[in-house]
Length: 361
Image (tube, rainbow, N blue to C red; front, side):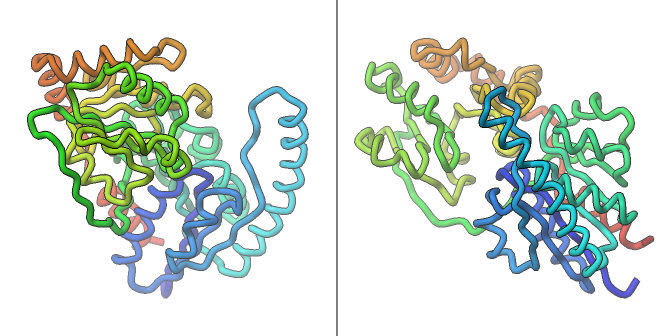
């Protein structure tokens, strides 16, 4: 074949977008004669990020299905029907014009239309599923995929009719800004992750714990989110570092001993990558409760403590943090258990499998 024409699709959230860009960037290095394209949503994280990737893109006005029961949800889902119709036309024209011979998708609502058109145009496609419980798009299109790559091995239990391969989740290595933090080396260090937007729930719990002097024996690296920094910056001390956003997460992972976080797929994958014990508090409104499934994967391997949001309190979380940090037997056990979990070289496995297919099409 003279030229490989590959469409990448997937987005809406960073959990779908960043693994896709990791796959794209690696294939870009390895495949010489190619044209690469991207299809996503104009409302997703990709609308702010894709232009830096130097790739021809199509962003369509589409949002995900609203699962709540309200007048707003009904009206938005009604609008979705029109978005799907016009999106199908635009994506069909994009396919007809660029004539792709391969589609690579990472799920989410931004993948639905491109995968549907790929089936209509008989274009082969690969899927990557980040979560322990597969999303709706993966369940719909997985059986027709050339291969479904799995971020968590137990996801195969929900994809009986799909050709699956456990690869783990590829980590997106973007430019990292140098940073240096000074901490007391005699203390254990806790990393609190709330994402770029921050977690209102986690920020409230951690601030109350600090106010009540429940976490005085540890260092705290606390990512509060860009919009919350002004509210929490007064907590900065020698042992507490309040951060709005960090472009060098590997550095923070290297400093910490324990992580308190939500349990999105990419966060759990980074925890596995850097082999850190954790306390995971799934976001209770995550789609199809997938964050609970992700957290259970680590909990069942005795590498993490899962606490449901409805059960948590300031005293409970503080006590569990202190118990893990102060009890060497507990900490060492969690550390050993996470180091035992198989964490494959995901990006290499994925790209090798895709390239094997490309050499026979």
